[in-house]
Image (tube, rainbow, N blue to C red; front, side, top):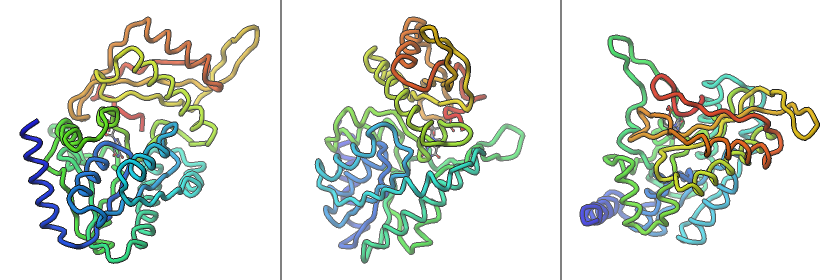
Length: 319
Ligand code: XMP
């Protein structure tokens, strides 16, 4: 894409001018945005960039390993893998209120990020994969007051606290443009096309209390669901798809036995920017095949539901 090629060269030049010979830290989440930002900045300034990946233990199946191997082995980008799952899951233990959970994760994230960033001596810049729509954090209802729906987890406030200057090379871009830029930078298609994944990770797909048990069940169910979507060639038609594990167990029957296991909800939406969304109209065949596979393959789930709420009035995530 000619336009994106020119944009890329321009962005690289701007990064070089802003940063000079100073060091940059970039928080890597495993998502498309921070990955594209990191690869772009690495192309501009090479090993002046160090990435910090805070692993909160709320990633999907195999996801943390994939992030580490892609950046460290594939791109040779200096990367600190901060495995802090014990800390996060410990502090989240027993917490069930959505905003409390989000705030705990946001606070710990900043602490941990700061701790590891301090190990990078002489860093003067903090890079973020902030997109244009990210700037909008609260929704104003017509005639009503401005209301914060969910406190978004990002490193807001961190740059000042750490005395770092911000590098935000994606600030003018929408999601589809970031993907085009990622292609231009040669990131693998399988990675670029990935659905968005929220900063607080599986915590907000596990309404109520988070336990390791539930997380493990959720990871397995989510992997089966995504596998189904890919097999049916639907992945690219969908903005975001995931499983939420519900904080309720229900009675079922398997063979000649009674089961008492968790219920889960499948979510899949189409959207342009995540601000509004429609549920995806799967066929009944797809839904029943997926439900059967999840119940057969994932121990701990005996009931599958499909969430048909649009946004608004629902949000995409459950918390
Ligand atoms: P909601 O659930 O508000 O989500 O409809 C809209 C989009 O934003 C993602 N999301 C987040 N992304 N940090 C993020 O980086 C967050 O705290 C967060 N909360 C929601 C969500 O996955 C969807 O794509």
